[in-house]
Image 1 (cartoon, rainbow, N blue to C red):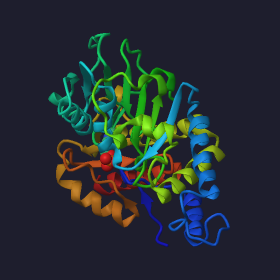
Image 2: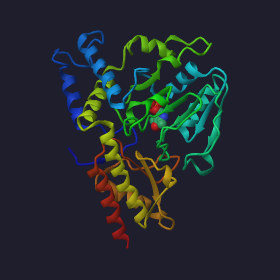
Image 3: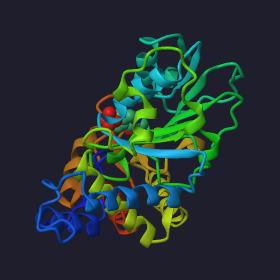
Length: 357
Ligand SMILES: *Cc1c(COP(=O)(O)O)cnc(C)c1O
């Protein structure tokens, strides 16, 4: 296979061992003689995968007994609606830190009273708003911990006087999280923990049942907690690969270990962006994401952008084009991206600078 360095923003790079095991399972799932694509989800062999996957989530994120984790289809975008359906009664606040946060807010506004408590759109979402007052009587505050498109991240689990809900699509399992601080954490798997097609939701069990509206069965988190994510056919193959990805994460030391590596990877690339005269970072330094590193050509060198894309592509860099709403470059350094991959990109930037001197 061609040697490449993959920095795709999502679906993300996955560990090779997870892919190898998935290939095996496509041919023969757990020694059943049946492909994982055809296995009945009502078998003990499949139950074992679901149980293992749930247990890995709990172990790796230290999820307390007060919470349960479920796996569903529909993408993180459908979770925007789940959130409002299950939690919005009187009033909810959203921290508007980007396109995804804004879409989550819009979905809630279709259901009830929801507003942006603070917004960083004035500077094209390059920072995380701070110092805003959070009313204690809100149904919840919704935050997007990592803003995939702009490369900003809320690095700490904030203290919140009202229930806290977080979209962690693009930084889940990249750093330790104090799950007890959240009523709900959700996200699509395809940014850091698996292939597209499955979402995770970590739910404080006693936070449900507080709204008076009728919740359609499929949109009610209680349905999926009660049936252990098997009320209907789960996204079998996506869950299989997610489980293999988490097994890999555990084997290398878990979330604490990967976090140290992620910090090193991000530092390597940000240091180069700050040093290299041809590039500048776009996000406010203190809010820089460990997962999505956004940068552009330095002022006066904008005309070199296409040339750098071609230069980097020739050296095997894949997926470094910034989101269409931001432009420039974005390198996503998810868990399966190695320090060698990041070093290769850094070397490529250095080489390009030398060429232009
Ligand atoms: C990608 C992304 C989403 C949307 O995920 P889908 O599964 O495509 O619906 C939502 N929130 C964040 C933070 C994302 O990065």
